[in-house]
Structure formats: C-alpha cells, structure tokens
Amino acid sequence: MAEPEEQREVRLGRCCKYHWRGKLAVMIPTLTSPILILGFTYDRAEYKCMYLIVTMALLWITEALPIYVTSMLPIAFLPLFGLVETPVVCRLYFTDTIVMFLGGLIMALGIEYCNLHTRIALRVIRIIGGSPRRLFVGLMSVSVFMGLWISNSAGTAMMCPIVKAVINEMDVNNIFPVYMTQEEEPVEEGDPPHPSKVSIAFYVGVAYASTIGGLGTLIGTGTNLVFKGIYDQRFPTSTEEITFANFMFYTIPLLVICNITLVIIALMITHMGLFRPNSKTGQRIKEANLNRKLLEEVLRQRHIDLGPMSCHEIQVAILFCVMILLLITHRPGFFPGWSDLLNAQQVRSSAGLLFLILLMFALPTQYTFFKYCCGKAPFPGQTLDALLAWKFVHDNISWGLLFLLGGGFALAEASKRTGVNVMIAKAMQFLIGMPSIAVQIITILLSMFFSVFNSNVVVANIILPILCEMALVVEIHPLILTLPSCLVISMCYFLPVSSPPNAIVTDYANIKTKHLACCGVLPTIIGFLLIILNTNTWGMLIFPAVNTFPDWAKEIKNQSNI
Image 1 (spheres, rainbow, N blue to C red):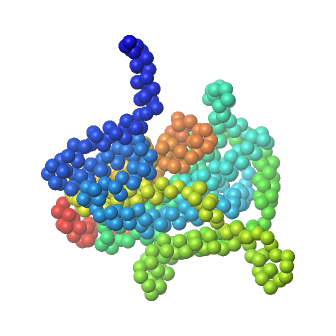
Image 2: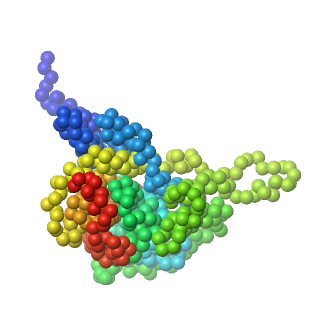
Image 3: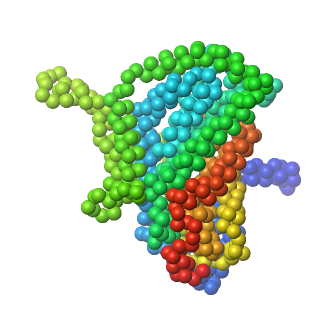
C-alpha cells in the first residue's frame, strides 16, 4: 500500500530538521568537487589547495562539522593531495604562537582556580564606588585589564559570576529593577526572566570590555595570534617584526584606552540614562544612587569575607606579574630584551611563559611542611595541592581552539607553496592605483561584515592570507592591510556568533539576540572609526616604515611571480 503523501512530507521535514548537518557534510565537498577534478585533470596544485580552502570555509561557516574537527582536515588531505608533507603539517599545529596561546589559557585557569579574579574585582569596585554607573565602570575596568593578559573568552567567563552576584545584591536590596516586566518582554511560563536594560549593560559591557582588552596584547585573543602566525609565515624576511611590546604600543592608546572610554559612555547613554535624567531609565538610576551606601556595605562585607590573601593567591599573583614582565621585555625593541641577553638558540616568548606554567604545577599552595622537615611525629597525613591541578586544566581548557589556529596556519602554508596566493593576487589587480586609505576602508569593512556572522578566529584564518597577497598586488605595506583587519574582526558586537564573549554572556544571562544587536551598534561604529584613525596616525609612529612598499616585500612579490 502506498504511503500517504502527507506522511511522507512530515518525515522529510523531520529529516531535514534533525539531520541537516550530516547532509551538508556530504553535499559541501560534493558541490566543490569540480575544483578538485580540475586540479587532478590538469595536475594543478593550486586548484587542489583551493578545493580544500573553499570546502573548509563552507564547513566552518555552516558548522556542518564541528569547527574544530574541520580544522583537522589539512592533516589528512594536504599530504594525500601531495601538497605539503605530513611532518610539516603536524608541526604547524603546535607552533610557538599556539604554545603562547595555550600558556595564556592555562594562566587564566590558574587565576580562576585560586579565586584571585574575584578579589581583584571586588577591590576595584570598592575603590570606585557603589552607584550603578560606578559599578559599571569598575567591572568594565577589571574586564579590560583581565582581557589584556588572558583570552577574552576566559576573562568573560570569569567575570560573569561576579556580575551576577552584584546584580543579585541589587535585586535583593531593591536598588533598581534587574529584570524586565512581562509587558516589556513577555516570557513563557517556566522560562527565566529577561534582564532589564541596566542589567544587560552590565553583562554586555563585560563582554565588550574583555574583547577590547584582548586587542591590546598578542595573547588577548586568538585572532591576534592568527595574524602573527600568518604574517611571520608569509613574510619571514620582514624588517618590521611583530613583538609583544610593539604590538601593545600600537594598540593600547587608541584601540584600548580611548575605545573602552567611548564604549562605556555609549552604553551609559543608551542603557543607563546618561545625559537623559528625565527618561525612565534615568529616573531609576537616580533612585538607585540614593541607596548606594547600602550596596557599598554589602560589597565591602563580601570583600572582607574573602579574608586576607592566601599563600596560594600571592604566588599566583606573583607569577602573573612575572608573566607580564617577561612578555613585555622579551624583545621590546628600544632596549635589549631578556632573550637577547641569553647566549642560546633563539628564544621566543612561549619559552618564558611555559616555564611559569610549569612552576604553577610544581609549587605547593602553602609551605607549612617546612616545620615538619626536622620535627617529630605526628606528621600530616595528606599531600599538599599544587597551585594548579591538571584535572582542572584538562576539564576547563578549550583544546579545540589549538586545532582551529593550527588549521589556519596549515592552510596558509599550503597556499604559499601551491601558488593559490598568486591566483588570488591576480584577481585583485583592479585595486591597483586606488588610494591607500580607500583600500584600507574596503578591506576593513569586508572583514567586519564576515565577522558579524562567523567566529572571528575562523574569519581571520580565511581573510588574512588573502590580505597578505592583496598587499603585494597593490604594493602597500602588508601591515597596513593585515593588522587593522585582524583587530577589527574582533570588534563586531552584533550577534552571539560574532565572538566568544558575546556567546558567553547571551547564554549566561538569557539575553535575546535583538537586545545584543542594539547594544552593539555604537561600539561597532566607534571601533571602525578608531581603527582607521589609529592606522593612519599613531600606527605610523610605531611602524614608521609602513608609509612605503618595502624592498623585502618587492623581493617576495618577484619570487611569487605576481
């Protein structure tokens, strides 16, 4: 008996709804297979590599396969296609850049493990004050500082519980409404309530601040390390070396300090009634200011409850400060760094960082055992914990990010070897003769557009190799195109998928996408304008050679036959 048509349609709909990832995982390589067929038919290595790049880009964008699984495809297919040897590909998954990123993640977990981040946040909040706007500035300041030295996603995850604790205290003490009413944002029975505009500002502000802080250092976000890895890989003879110190000098003044100041003011205007005292939100903030003494007392008591700093916290704080010192003084450029003073093989920042990480696993949380060394029984019956437990690291670190970075580096190496860069460069010759500022605006806007809808590390892996070749075609210093685009990729604040901090806060605080998109309009515009300003003013002082097309770039262009 024939199956009813209606039943077949229902089954087809359910199949597409629940199994679309599997279908796409088969359809995408099939649809892009003509590129591979051309490669094997005419024995063109660039077409084989282009097939893998396009297929991985579509799989990354659609997430038909987990993005970290997609990132491992080069390990299998680059050697199978005869493009890059297996040992070379595998080495790219654990480079100096990736080790430095891993060290930053582990240091962040060390801070979280001893609860040092809570002490820092409460101390800063107590210094700044207890009114809603002052609390907002305090939490944003802590988030920016943390974002400089640990990954922005880790910093956001660490700050969210602190923000929740502060907002809960405001709710308990009736400082101001922390949730929307049923009329403002209806919710189904049993669903959690939506945070109010002021509460949204706190959560979203922490995410934005962590992202902005991540712009300030190489280890602050994965896109910065993608940039460094791809730039060093494509331009090994560049005289403008990207070091931890000159990257900080390039970004801190305008893209961190000025940026966070303007973003704080923007969120205060849109969500906290700044300059609008007669608005509904402005009136609520005014009433909350009258009760700030009560909230300050609650926060003071929470800080006191932490007690004095433990030996565990002191040691982690010292290692954290030493890490900052080692990263900045590795090769600062204006005086000899510690790596220059060592009479050894070339030493990168990852060596000093990993040395500190090893100490965290070796040093004990306290040193009371010394009094038992020459003493008599009874002795303690248990071992002392280390500053950081491997199980905690194993369970909480995002190992997939290492594969994501490595996959991008592997594709960049394959593109350079097979001549894909030459194909891309020839397709961009229409940009020749355009003013430098116009090319900058085009590349920055394109980078921003793609990063709105996709993970920023994925976008960086796709966009930055193309910009390296574009710079050679239009004969502009590669830093002028690659570095601003790398930074602006992290500065799209519209959607949860745009960056890990956005995804973390929307899930943690139950913030709807439409509210996040509204929050992100002004910060995104501010970020775009500051990137253009920084590139053509302050950036020229840090990298004065970027005004001209350098000789080493001309040599690379000639070697590539572009």
